[in-house]
Length: 194
Ligand code: ZN
Image (cartoon, rainbow, N blue to C red):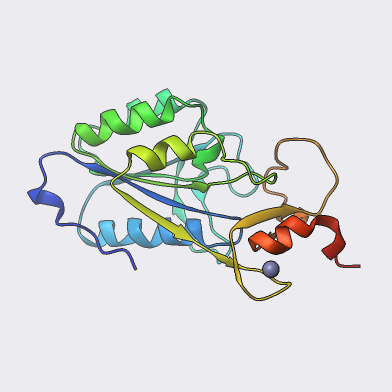
């Protein structure tokens, strides 16, 4: 479990990354940390990419309905509109942002903010996804969360696409994906449920 560093003794902020496959609990972990920051009376702001409209436009919502209000933004540069007094910044679905997200997160961390970034580390092809690998490289803390592979019960690290499409991602269509371990992911369609 992630334990928060002592916030006020640091001269700068820092970056935490929460990554993993679909159904791994990334957003739940993000929400858990943000709620703890609120309990500590820290000012929190939450951002997500505007194109993620699968649920309520204004909320970071996880599959267990444990929700917090968020601001949809189009480009990572929109993060710079964050309020001066904000101490903790949560970013959900970070894989969908442009590559400048890494630079903006670093600038905000240096300016004293605690940045908590959640996102898919791999796309449905098993390739590193958007700015996530760069964010992981420059972050202070990385937490990789896992789903469970429904075929073998091992830890799942990959998001397998059940639907046939060549789009990079079918956004939010969770019915079209299942988590898989490395081995079951490699078997592909052989393991399709009837
Ligand atoms: Zn498996």
